[in-house]
Structures are given as C-alpha cells and as structure tokens.
Image (cartoon, rainbow, N blue to C red):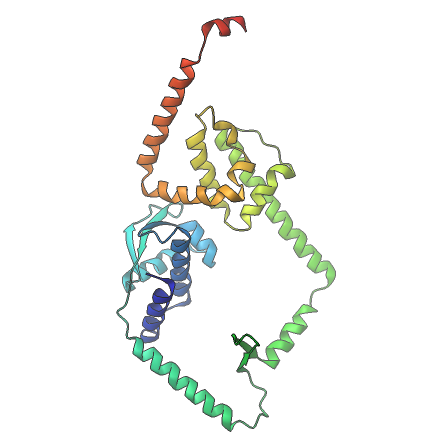
Length: 295
C-alpha cells in the first residue's frame, strides 16, 4: 500500500462515477491517507472526528458522518469500530481499492492532451482567455502556470481594497483569538491536573505553537491522557506542565499514544494502575517513621 496507488485508484473510480463523487469525499479520504502515513502506515488506526472536521473544514457533524459512511460504502475505507459521538474516534483501515478501470481515465487524459495540443497549434495567439501554459526550468522540472488576466486583475485590486488599519485590525483579532484559545487550554490543564499555572508567556508559548498545528481538542486529549497516567505518580506529577506536554520533541509521541489508547483503553488503564501500585510500594519501603517524628 502506498500513496500513489491509493490516489490513482481513487481518481480512476471518481472518473467512472461523477454522479457520486463530491469534494468532501476527496478531502476526507486524502486526509485519512495523510493521517495513516503520519502514524507509520498502521493497518488500523484511530480517526478522531473533531480533528478530521477541523482539518478539512467541515463544520457539520452530520455532513462528516455522511461523507465517511459513503467512503465506506464506496469501498475506500473499512470501518473497524464506530465512534459513539463526535468527541470520540472511529477506528478505520484503508482499503486497497482497485475495482475501477484505469484505462478509461488514461484514454480520456490522452484524448484531452491531444485535443489541447491541436487547439494550441491552430491558435493565432490573439486570445487572452485563461490557458494552461507549461514551462521548463534549467533543471528540467516541469512547472505549470495558469495565466488568467481577469483573475490577476481582480486579485491585484483586492490587495488595495483593505486599508492598513483594517489589515492591522485583522491581525490583532487573529492574535487575540489565538491567545484566548491558549488561555482556554491552560485553564483546562489547571482544572484537569489540579494545577495553578499562571497566564504568562512562558506557559502560553508552548500551547500557542501547538495550536498552529492542531485543533484545541487534540491538546485537551493529551492533557487528559497524561493526567490520567501521571497524576498519581509522585515522580511524574511535576511533569504535568505546558513545557513538557506541548514540547515539540515529545508532542508527536503523546499524540500517537492517544490513538493507541483509543483502540484499547482498558489495557492502558490496567498498565497505569499497576505502575502506580508499584510506585506506592516502592515509596513505602523508603518511609522511616523516626524521620517523620523528628520533622
């Protein structure tokens, strides 16, 4: 299984079924491929609803569920376990779908290319309609430029529509929204882990950095996971802090752990309870009553 084959099979099928395919299908399917790739091409993996909706811009939960179900019905995704609600993850697997006829799309592309070449030869060069112009650089890498005078003119005019004050106001609003989201995550950490971190830049900067890459729900899931794992561990409790939880070198590992736990939460719970029990026994061995009396 690789990205090229999955992509080719999808577009072969899409070409044969234009009445069924929608933009949401391709967006969700290729995000599922990307997510699976980042998890190391796991055979089956958690597919968090909120994360997927945020990534592809779907606002409606019903639209997301309908799109996912249709991808399952089409045969591109295998549903291993359905989520209970929009805040939990579906367990899915990617199917090596190869039922579509690849010759149909290949022939259509060749026919279109030939027709376009003939049209280019016959052109007088006087038209300024939108065309695809193929260019080559010195390293023989192909790049494609879309020349559309009307679009270019509109784009240029839009740059001057907003005055500097409006642009500055937009930047200010965006920064304020980011700060509010980071503050919300810090409050969630304080409430969940029974901490009292202040809203200062040294605490917020790690959260802001991760919010550029992931939606708030993902950060909250990591807080919940590590709090459950570390809160009763006298060695690890101190690491329930922003600089550890949202450090870029560890964050991806925590994120992958969240997905693993979603697939087998009871196994993780048993592991944590056993480890905490061993830690308490270890601590009691080093407890000296005489030291306690002398305090």
